[in-house]
Image (cartoon, rainbow, N blue to C red):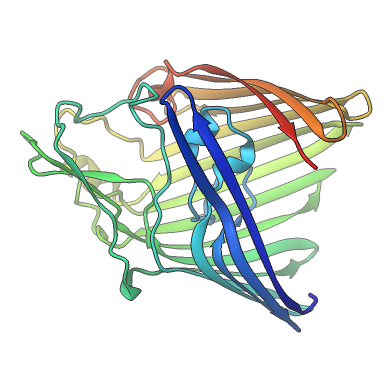
Length: 352
């Protein structure tokens, strides 16, 4: 890496006509400094780790699923967070460490714009309890990567919080108040990716250590899990690519989870499985791009389809049209609850 200091910023100006709302979003704004094998970055920045395609195990940085489900460009799935990143490189390995002082949760759709499942819909008294902004609650993430037998290998570690909120009722039998909490979490994982079998093979796994419910007896806090994925991508002919992934979540202490689950709440499976398929075809000298990304869970019995067509009208102007299609056998699964939220999106993008 070269040396020197620099600055980068990216800001979006937004207008939501449906809700008559205008806003300014500073997606990234950070300072950089590099000298020899060291690289430092401080400020609001976006990090991307892991080898999954729209599946995240060791990438514990903030996501915006509301943006994905409403048809915004794919890059808006990742959101920035104020953090400090230090990297060191060598011929044998590289190390990245990210410290984030202030916790930011994932952003999910709200009932104002989406139809969603809510097990406590009758409870309107709700408060959010984010982790306090102090040194003890700072998030830490580390990645050590190096080539191994022609594959890109990496080890990961994370200390912080679940970004998906949990609901803590004041009473499990007759709740009158809900507290939105983000339990403590530690994750340890690894990934491997490289060329094999005429394509690209990817493997990733992580152990999610639920620090506030190690025994798995608290129905409010998620149990510890082992998450894993395997993927294969290849290009059988020119300008066409196909990719498959299998993803699983295996819950630890499942019998204790079953015993502590309050009556009336939906029960999760011990193993949640998810399959994805990505198909991409370029046409007319790559000025047209036709794509399909699909999620299907045989355990949850739900799905999510994203067919899309994009055309480079000029070198600077791109027009895109796509559809988000959701469905499922039950309205209490992650994708099944979105069954009534199918939408069509159209975008024009000018870059210069």
